[in-house]
Image (cartoon, rainbow over all chains, first blue to last red; front, side, top):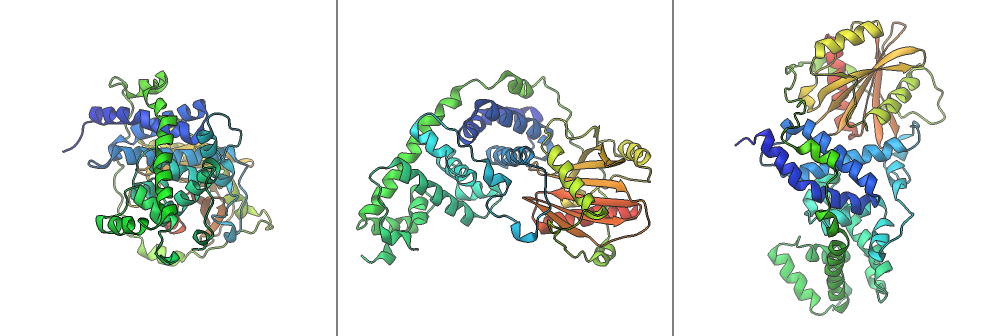
Length: 175
Length: 257
């Protein structure tokens, strides 16, 4: 069955609040989040015909939003330099530098905002949006194992900050 | 219980997230019976999830901004770029083989000769325009012939916008740029998931050709080459392999035209 464009638009509209929730948790700034969701919906509508029937609109939209977010982060960064192959994918590249630091508000929100962006994405897509590890990996374009380790590191940081009684047993540190 | 039998953080997380199958979940629960710290971790993870919802669920009931809602009204007739351009069967095996593209990472210390300048300009243009959501292009790609005619005239070369549907990327359009003191063109392509790849083209003043080379800039990479009269660079945030196949598709299409 092929969905009409009108019903596809309805499905996208139904996802908009969730896109906004994730964008706000990810970016904190209301204006930035609204811009991101707006751009995501513009791009989704322009690509409506490419949405494969049966594909989850949620995963599709979150993927589009993630790609736009990366472009946004990058366009704010400095002009490109040509780098040797070794610098590929190293921490410190533009996307890593994008973690916002100026945070106020409830403790949990501050702690989430202080996470490196890659860990924040995983903590929020799994813990808030309820995406499976596999869906999260597809949205972010990384292997499932990467999602699991980012998630685990992000959650550990949150716990160190939010759970005063948490003392990490030494033997768990090894592994 | 020995440490080896304890669940590690990733396993505890998978248990709390419902990612384990029945059997794995069963044995995880069995290990937890003797692992107080592990039980505390699972409780904490469940707690974290509840706190995240408490903090952010309020957004769900907020009004979506009017400008965004307007996009989603049935009356909003957007120009759906539904029609793939005619599928061009590119039997270009020989050309691709001839290319053999070796990869050269440009050193930061390297000089800015004409070729590296080409890569730098292309990466810069991609960075600026790939993030333009509503106006990534000046001239829409649905009328490829018109776009090609316009760019040919401005660049002073006989140029036909490459169609690379077989790579999953479709042409969304193009724009004219300034490359130093000369005109250059930037064509933007997009795939189903909204990833964008751009082709930067300028007229190469002298006769000559080079092999395909790779330039990297953060998460972006560009394959670039000269095959006079064209100097081309294909930029995007794809894996090297994937970007190379797009670049080869474009190379073949240009060489055939």
